[in-house]
Image (cartoon, rainbow, N blue to C red; front, side, top):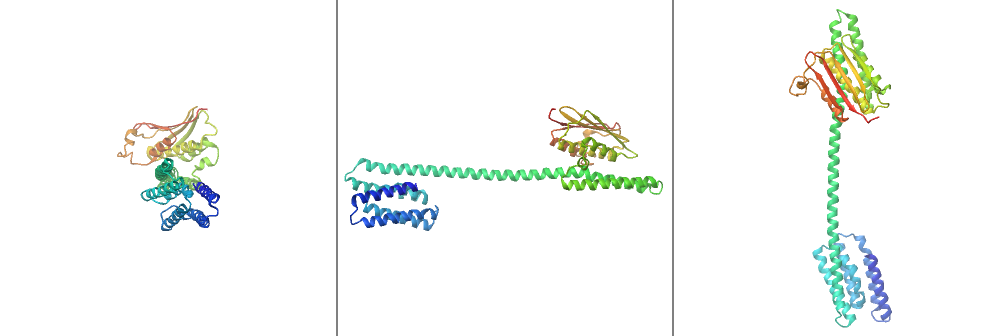
Length: 379
C-alpha cells in the first residue's frame, strides 16, 4: 500500500507537469506533493494506535491531499491508499465516514476533469472504496480472531506446562519417597534391630553382640554409600559398582543373611545384556523392599530370590517360610497390615511405572511368595 501511494503520487505529479508545467499553481502543487510525501513517510514512525500525535498526523495528510486535489484533480486517485491509512489509524466508526469523505472528494475531482457526469466516475470510486473498506474490516476481524486463538493456545500451553510441572513434582516426590524407603529407611531399621539385639546380648554373649555391632556398622557404611549415590544420580550403589543385576542381588542377599535368616539367589535363564537400567534398578529395589518386609514382619528363617528371564519379560520371585499374612487384608488401608509400612505400595508403584505386575501368594502360617514381572522387548 505504501508503494502504491508513492506510485500514484508520482504519476499525478508527472501528469500535472506534463499538462500544466508553466501554470501559476505549479510551485504550490510541487511543494504540497513534497509535503504530502514527507508526511506519509513520517506515519509508520508514529505507530498505528490512535494517539493524539497520530490523529494530528492523519489530519495533516488529509489536509495536504485535499489542497492538492483542489489545485490538481488528477491527485484524486491517491485517495485509495489513504483509505487504508484512515482505516488503520481510526476505529471503524470514525474511519468509515473519513473514507466516505475522501471518496466524495475523489468523485468531485474526477467529475471536474471529465466535464460531465460520467457513470464510471460516479460509480468507480465508491465501488473501490467499498471493496477496500470491506476487505480491510474482514481482515481485521480475522486477525483479531487469530490473535484471540493464539492467546488462548498460549494460555492453554502455559496451563498444561504448569500442570505437567506439578505432576512431575509429585511423581518425583513419590519416587524419592520410594528410594528413601528402599535404601536409607531399611538400613536404619536393620541397624536399630541389630543394635537392640546387641544390647540384649552384650553381657550374656559378648561375641554375638560384637558381631551384631559389626554388621550394623557394615549396614551403616552401605547406607552411607547409598546416600551419596542417591544424592549423585539415584543409581543403586550395588548396580553402580558394576557386575549387573545378578551380582547386585547376590550382594543384597549376602547383606541380608544373618544367623536367623538365610537368603539365597537362584536364576533361570540369562538376563538380556544389557538389561535396561530402569528395569535393573526397579528389580533391585523390589528385592530390597521385599527382604525388608521379610526381616521385619515375617519371622522367617530362609528366603529365596529367584530371577527368571524369559523372551518377553523378566520375573523376580521372593519367597520365605515366615508366618505369612492375608494379602487381601494387606491391601485394605484400614487393616493393621495395610498400616504397617510402605513396602508393598512402593513395589506396586515401581512396577506400574514400567508396565509390570505384582502377584502375592500368602496365608497365615504358610509363608509368602511375591512375584514381580516386568515386560521386555522381545529378543
